[in-house]
Image 1 (cartoon, rainbow over the protein chains, first blue to last red):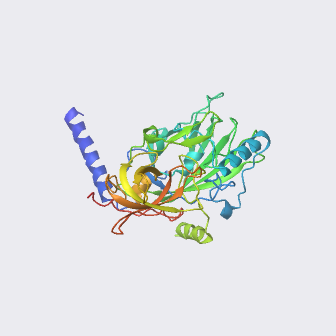
Image 2 (cartoon, rainbow over the protein chains, first blue to last red):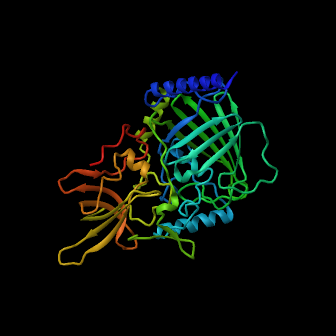
Image 3 (cartoon, one colour):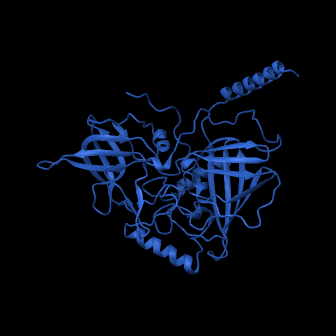
Length: 265
Length: 143
């Protein structure tokens, strides 16, 4: 096949994809995609979080168990030093002086807090990898689906090491190697470096994903903690926005670890 | 679709939500979410930025000196979904804002709404979380 024919094929493929994308009505999956096995659900595209949230136990944010009242999931099962830490954070928040965390410092939300959004996420399926790009802070997760194993002694990362595989219509993601300084949720619920998260991403219909997450942390939790997150396919014409968190972050961290808001900037 | 019905059922159960709406970037504990205050002033700057947009407002109370107030608004995405854009507010514009005040008494807070002097709503209170798919369509044209 010469270069001209190749170019023609590529152009034809581009036109086919462009036509399919242009024809897709709002909120529906494009009929074609560049990658991904035909027998697997198509989760490529833009997804909007469904911001169903409950007050955290301390009433100042979104708890990890975001649908707790419906699913009967209780308050964070913290124990020992981690429970004391959470109580310290709660008391400070109640006094109007919340502690800083990796989100307020514009570092990253980290897994599992990033499952909540609150801004859109782009999922890109490529051979052997599913990439999730959060609009919030350009946070990127690379979920390897090529059969590799988790590293024996992973370096701790904000979003950990992500290994995925498909079980029918469900993408199962195993996450280890998570940093201990991220919070589980906006309530700043702490966890340890032993946190192990398992996520089940199920395409309920072409436009709705449910994520059932289980967080196990033998150092910090008395028992595994469950949560559910919902994402809906975004409008077909939605373009991901630039989001540089350091651009106008007015939440500074004080020497004592609490955060203050800069005014009049 | 059972899933849609499920979502609706969740709503009717009425999960309470933080007044600040979706908050990923930082705790809202520095704001008094139980109280809403009102002020009228002149826009000095509308910072169309992430992780939050900010409104700088000059407020002159009767007999007082001009005072600068800072109001934190939502992320660009959340504002766009509410049909707010970077030219919705502009320097020199007189607006009335409602906000959850800073608990430390400093001049500012978490912006709830902004209204033009002719009564036109510029920024409306955030929808309750769980309101489902955000309103579609492009934001209105810039003035």
